[in-house]
Length: 274
Image 1: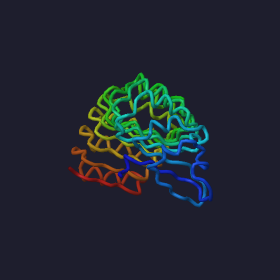
Image 2: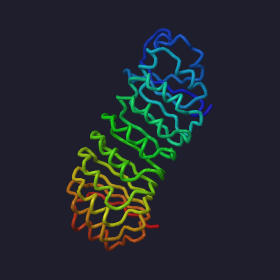
Image 3: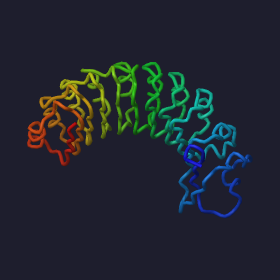
Image 4: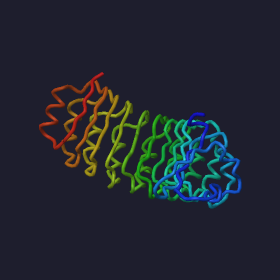
């Protein structure tokens, strides 16, 4: 039995009937469960499993104990399941990466999860600006993962910056992301970590805009083919930036890295050539 076939549960170490602890009267849905005792109550984690659909129908008490759902690459997730997920009132983390049946309407239901702290929507390619706008109501969200999006541009970025609690943002393989659009990220006053991977239209001008993200402490840039040493030096203006990772940006040179180290307060630069 692999991770895609089981439910993982974090439960308190107490004696008694397990199903009463869960508050469900349908023990058959937990037949593939793994019970992980903890010193103190940490909530419940559910991984993708063949019985996930049955969990939708379980008791309210059990639903309220669930804090994390990992459905990565789970082919059976559709808008019907997401509609029912809104009953999981205390859900903190949701991973829907590689769930390729999701679309803009899917985010209507995700937006109902008002306690969500972490959301991964990577490789859900049918989501566009029209869907991203629904996320603006998730005012507890801290990390947001958007990877492999062809339908998001400036309009979507403007909606993302409504997430004022956002601390970590992954923008990867977003083809329409281009110069002057990342300037809107300056509205994210709590943003500490930014990841820009394979956004092929980003140039040195965009790094100049990033230099205005004063809270930024960590930046990763990877496969940005138009970035040069000139753009790199703009990052010296980020007084709180401590960590910089650069990978496969072939126009950046050793000389540019050395000059940035001289001019910035960076504690760590991880530089890898192609």
